[in-house]
Length: 287
Image (cartoon, rainbow, N blue to C red):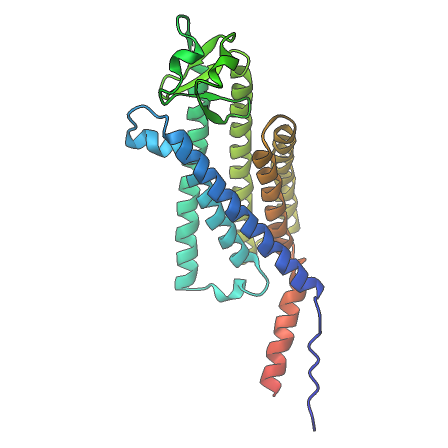
């Protein structure tokens, strides 16, 4: 008797969901390369960099790499088709990598705080104009916190502005731009700490679920705190959309979408994939 292949043809809802997740991941990878380029550019203006200065200069890239690793680990641990495969030694490897990522994320949050303190410590320049620093490896900060090399051409646009100099870098800021840099620094602080709260809640939820201790009451408490953290992240994304550059708000919205997709895994809305995998396994055993 011939066996009919009942495998659905065409693009299913589950495969479309999977393709969407993979697409988001690759876009985030592209954003990582852009932020790495920005950190390298900014690092060129650091005066006699020490190891600490180097780590602070690359705080964004280091933070981003840790987030990329962490979201892959969350996907593996919560995905319906793969979460049961990670036991024993594999589970310990994931736990170790997750802990390392948390250390990096906490350090990156410190880096944002140090950057904000540095912004508050910009020193006024009374005797020199912008063109005095042109073509001398100095940069000026834009209102979106991006360093632009100071040249003979663009320095004239700053001649009428009162200048402030970073205490650690070859970086200048005008009196009109400095308040925007401080506001963006505070947004970075709120954003980084809200994300730390999100991943902490994810870890608690995942640990309770794996230990079969995730009651409805505990899940409700976690979801309330997670909702608060997401609200802060949403407000930060809106602020960047209005006041910052394209890459900042684009990246912020992408990460919100990425973690919502992980939440779908956590809430079991991806269980159709798990059921289909179980059905295929049962069919294979029967044959």
